[in-house]
Image (cartoon, one colour):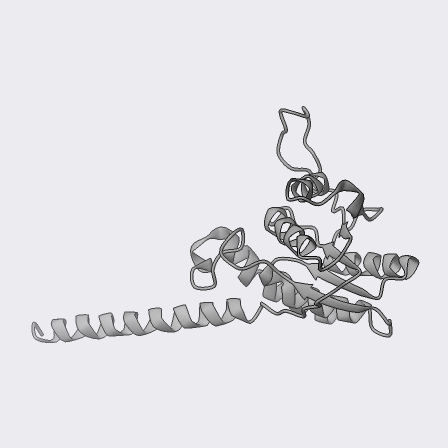
Length: 210
């Protein structure tokens, strides 16, 4: 019996080691599977999708694309959500206002930023709003900017809504590791579980709903 204990111990250690390796691999694959790109070298406009927890990285990336000359206009949507208290303004600014401010700080002129009217509550509503705006302005190419882990659902939704349209829609996202956690360590953070693990049920819902 005494001799069996070391064997059981090392067997458990090996099992744990294998389990950790498998978990790391599955977690990495699950994260990477959500990331897609459908780039457009040039577009008539950039649309930055709303997202209170990721608005900084999304708008900084959009500003970078603007400075590269990828599009002359940046479009924002309003999800109606407010951010934290601003001492300077003595109020809780809307995240769409914070997004516009972030763009201005990164060199995008105010006249090249447009906020779509109305409030949206989902990526699908943003896509519908974008299609209407594109039709009214005669836009033919729009590059959507979102977070990396949201890119697959965003691209599917845009293709679904723009089906039958002559408008070409692409999707781009900032690199992982800023506001969006890295694919190897997302599971160590609550935000990672929300952005990666939480994205799969949303994808299933969208496929069934739309």
